[in-house]
Image 1 (tube, helix red, strand yellow):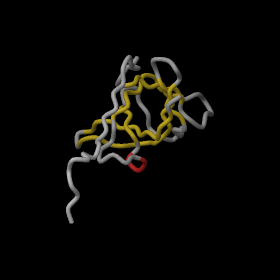
Image 2 (tube, one colour; image 1 turned 180 degrees about the vertical axis):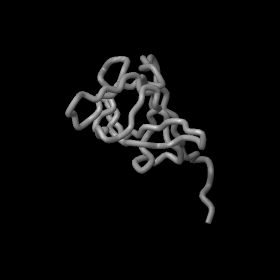
Image 3 (tube, helix red, strand yellow; image 1 turned 120 degrees about the horizontal axis):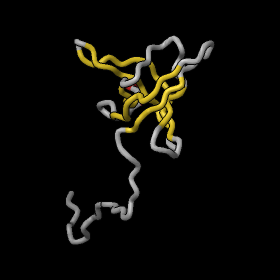
Image 4 (cartoon, helix red, strand yellow; image 1 turned 30 degrees about the horizontal axis):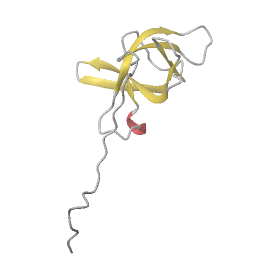
Length: 110
């Protein structure tokens, strides 16, 4: 059920180039879909998927995965794109939450 703003990227001789943006959607399987990428945008198998630059609160884009399949049907407005996620689904057995507590033995100073 995950959905997140994502952006295509590929390596050029001058470094990474960020391209079209779309929505990365989990499907409950081992692949995701990248939707809302216009037919006029460039997409290739092997392109990488990152969090979209303008939608992220992170200082650097987070890596989502790689384009596994990209199909543009005749007359379609959007690409059909399947993405292989960078990380497999994790089956958590245990979760730990770390918090801080105020030490009552410490006196507040003014």
